[in-house]
Image (cartoon, rainbow, N blue to C red):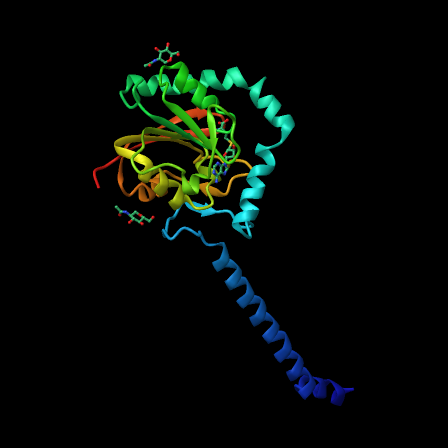
Length: 246
Ligand SMILES: C[S@@+](CC[C@H](N)C(=O)[O-])C[C@H]1O[C@@H](n2cnc3c(N)ncnc32)[C@H](O)[C@@H]1O
Ligand SMILES: *[C@@H]1O[C@H](CO)[C@@H](O)[C@H](O)[C@H]1NC(C)=O
Ligand SMILES: *[C@@H]1O[C@H](CO)[C@@H](O)[C@H](O)[C@H]1NC(C)=O
């Protein structure tokens, strides 16, 4: 018995071999976790803290397909254009009236609403007298919303005096989303974003924002006019930028 116990304490070639296999397994698992993490880092070139791109969009097509799934849903479109229609317009009108009082928007502004879906925000702009208004979305809704991707806006440089969006969280490439706004705004033009910073947005979001700091970094050709808390359909913060002379 004694002999047997002593023998089992000596590492046999077999146990050394097994230990080596287990060790290399651990190393492999560690390495694969490392590369997985690096894939989950923001796609954006900015080393921006407080802004995370959601993993899981394996290609741009997957992302677009996911966005379209909800936007083209016939039952939802029916609700958006009936039950939700007037209610949302009223709320948007309040936001835009305030911006008019603050001289950040005027009836002569040429205005764009990004990710406008069925365009209640466009309708609201028209009702507060900003007649020259149009919406942009992957799915058109004539006459107020035309088809286009906000990562590649179908407009010339310096087209708009005012751009509004409550869909920043749907941008897979936040730097392109903001870059296109800065490109199509006139110098001195105003961009108003409604974003969620202290709550998570829906499962169709492509990024999560944890403060307004990343926006300040992304709007590198603009100045921050102001930022305030709002209650806008699950979005809690209104951020206003003005495009600077280049
Ligand atoms: C949460 S909905 C907001 C709709 C509208 N702004 C409102 O408040 O009722 C997000 C919208 O963004 C649109 N969208 C998502 N990705 C887009 C993209 N890359 N380019 C243009 N629109 C996009 C979707 O089609 C959807 O209509
Ligand atoms: C905007 O359109 C409405 C309705 O057509 C009109 O009554 C209003 O005068 C127009 N406003 C401007 C600033 O052109
Ligand atoms: C702003 O950032 C973009 C990249 O996100 C870059 O291409 C551009 O040159 C920058 N512009 C300024 C004015 O720094």
